Image 1 (cartoon, rainbow, N blue to C red):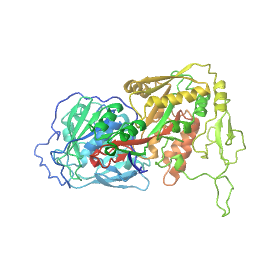
Image 2 (cartoon, rainbow, N blue to C red):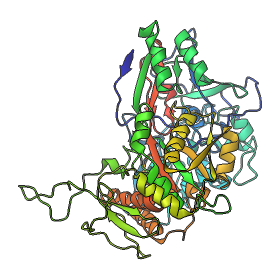
Image 3 (tube, rainbow, N blue to C red):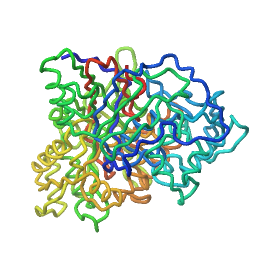
Image 4 (cartoon, rainbow, N blue to C red):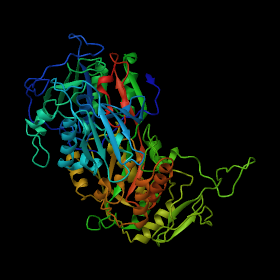
Length: 606
């Protein structure tokens, strides 16, 4: 088996688990979408043109998108497809996706982060030859805000003002240093305003363009939609107006197939790239003849797998019980989960490794006053952590869980409880004795606790049920009777989003590679609200959330680390794993470029 070495900065993403794909027609629409009378098609300046006789690139994936309207999709396969169809104002450096670089526009961010001036590149055109102007940008942004939902949520209160046909300014009422990264999300792909408006697009809830955009292109990316076959297949064709480097494959066919079929397809040559094989399946694909024809590319993902505990007692009185929640926290062994799930690393916090503020990326903490022979601080040999006793009081504990005297300068928060201090070990250690004591104190009498998850959507190729079963086994050792509750993704996600699930297992990948994105887990955030976690639930977490959001420069690492530590100890989410991702490809493919937001850049597959 040939394995390409991981490039640590590259990652593939599984979006927040979403609904099964759904389109309404199997017609073969025009690949160029709408046209504007009187427009003059531009001449392509692509550096290469694939031959017409070339066989299409075939990609196998489990579809999780419901639309190809870029603004309305926020799913793994939706982001992958719309990234190929639409350009964005900024983009992510293909060699280091943590870095934002100009896309359609050059930009200048003000020192305080409150305004962003952008200027479109010259001679940009949509796939129908229509010139791209500031008006298209304003329509795209205002339509996103008017539609509401996740795209509007990440944009927040951003306003846009036209300067001229190529120049505009985006403004925020407060510092918004994440805005350049936000604009790289495929959900903010710039739309052909005239084409979209002519097919029901507008600003506000009356917009009716999604059906059109799920079958036709209205962008300027390297590909256009050639056809859509229900929920089974999307066929892309090279955009004749594309002015960048031509994609290696003139046609891309993305098929909705289960992992078991993906395994057969990659072994027989029916697919060139598949995205959802488990580690064992990928090994089997590469181990059987012709082994030299199959390559497995593994790399660290930016996906977070986590448990959510609803804080509303009307939904589940046990997940809303803070002492019962502490029993779960203390009973979870992340290291053991990482060992049981091939290619996964234990997640010490909500922010995955590779993104600013990740706990495992921070320098080792030091003991106050400890110095080495050079007089510089040295790491503590007996790091401590803060734990909650069944009575609700907090004590400082050493490596074995026994009480010690706090010597690390812990300060109290607004509610009189200690402010968390980032200390080793970074990954919270399990403590069965403390977990069982908390469980007894909670009043739990052996009631079954359903653990809900989307059974038909793997997490980076890993069957979700495998992770759920491992979690249930660990909680069983604490004394908690967990009943696995696998549901179709459509059902599970609808219930979770509406806040009707008590204990559940999910995955989250970044909408943009900035720690601010993870404040969605905070009180009142997009994800926090799903767990009934609202502002006022915890005054310390409220304060640390605000402090992290307002942090700048070098202060961001420590501000987000303190926020995560507080969330670990007091929030309704338990980080579990950061899995690896793997792409399995056949001998027609030399490179599969991964990305933490849009999974794979289809136009850069060679």
